[in-house]
Amino acid sequence: MSIVNIRTYLEKSLLINDTDWNFFTARLQFRKVKKRTKLLEIGEIEEYISFIDKGIIRFFIPKEDKDKEITFGFCFSNEFVSAYDSFLTQSPTLYELETLTDVEMWSMSYADLQEVYQKTSIGNTLGRISSERLFLIKSKREQSLLNETAEERYLKLFDERPKLIKEIPLKYIASYIGVTAQALSRIRRRIT
Image 1 (cartoon, rainbow, N blue to C red):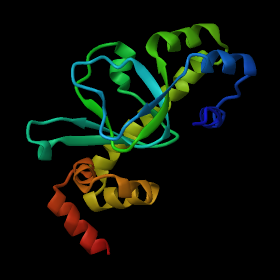
Image 2: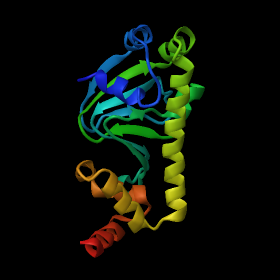
Image 3: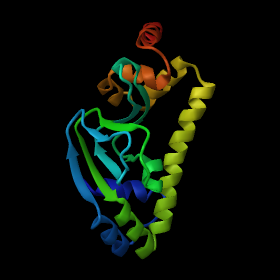
Image 4: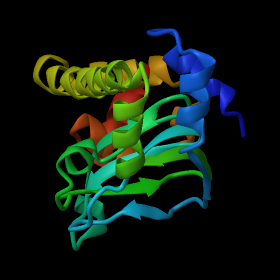
């Protein structure tokens, strides 16, 4: 577990003085979560924004028939994860978050983040950068669904995360790119 990864990630966009860093890190809580653990269920309010040190988390809409669940996002190591709309509004979520692997992450509560915003010189910039990155991920996903074929979406996911994609069950990848598991099998056969 390394809190240094968060600083390295953040300092790509802003310089953090040691006083602000110490204030920020004092509010982080390290969490280890086992594979296949639900982090958030429909109707719950997201209490945390977290930085994944290790592991994979998926965003999905559950269905009674598990084969019809809709996976619409993944977060990987060195990324922030949150049901961000629920976190921002402190209202119940309409989807769920689940670990696909064992996960190690650093989490900050909504109340603690508000304090970081108010009491540090980097607070507002940090909030803006996090919001912008989460928005860009969402926007990129929406544009991908509108402009790319399922095969292009699969190849892009495979190019961006070649090692990690092996840890994601194919049914979740199929749902994520908007096809059935059978269609994904055909795509994979064509590619190889």
